[in-house]
Length: 106
Image 1 (cartoon, rainbow, N blue to C red):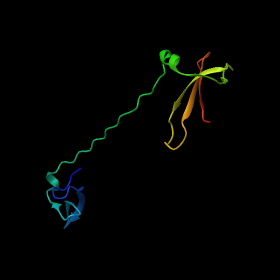
Image 2: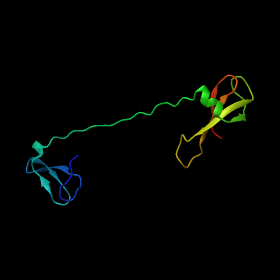
Image 3: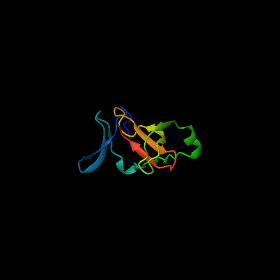
Image 4: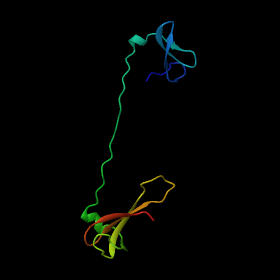
């Protein structure tokens, strides 16, 4: 992106007398568009998937919950903010016996 040297605003392309120029709202015009090299780069950083290991599982709190897979009565749980900040957290549960993981949206 190119910025105006006078006011610092973004310069926008404009056709003036059949020639493309860069123009600013303050009145500045850059007529040397051909000499300007415009490059576009996109920086995209992907988030890594968080995995809870067996060591971390021992540190998680234990609660009474019925496993939908093996019907065991105890599960470890943790909370994650998966939606907007004004909505409640999502509770993830992991069965103590069979290690099955599920969500509790309540």
